[in-house]
Image 1 (cartoon, one colour):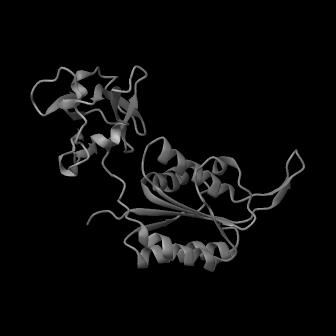
Image 2 (tube, rainbow, N blue to C red; image 1 turned 45 degrees about the vertical axis):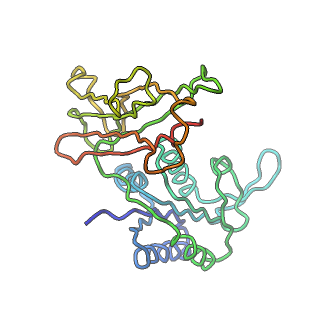
Image 3 (cartoon, rainbow, N blue to C red; image 1 turned 45 degrees about the horizontal axis):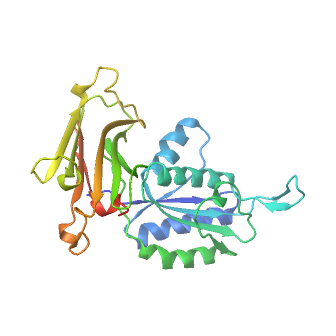
Length: 288
């Protein structure tokens, strides 16, 4: 059976009411949605933190955060502020890292007990928090928002790829020069030494390409020394950089037929595991 997308529930557990709210959200997600809830329990050991909370955050497709009052203090400027849960703040920061740095889509809903001050990383994120006065406010809002989600389970493949593209400074109005790069990422808890990476890129965007529809690139562990080929858990390794060009000659008509829009394809493989693949529309890696 395919793995269900995980919904990470970050809720305070300081009072019985807070614990009840976390349990109610967990029950709602499990019984009334196609998703798998994870109600984050506070961990007292590093092993428990890594194996439970951080692992669940890494695999989460959605993040529900509920911040309750944790007391009022006066800042050096003399202004009083009301703090929220430190645990929730930390988990939200990790979620932001996963979304912005690891480039993984994560649905986020943030609830603030009315009066909690906007501070820390929350003040920098483009989130529109929902103020609440009671547990029912949170549950009623979730029953509206969650059914709109179309979550996909995070990949459990041990080896995946992260990719990025950038517009180069020598571009002009009629000619946009880009660089596409691919990094392998060890998504497991074990060292990976046997691997293969493949890239197919539409040849019409590669200068001096031959007549074949795609330019093919491949590399594997045998192309590296014993030390350089190793990919440690949580580590990345760059394997491809490929320049490409978008001009008036290869772009016209691209948006008229979605089925014919060229796609970039990446496949990575490692021993004793299913290959990981992704297709990227050329329209997602250009600004022409």
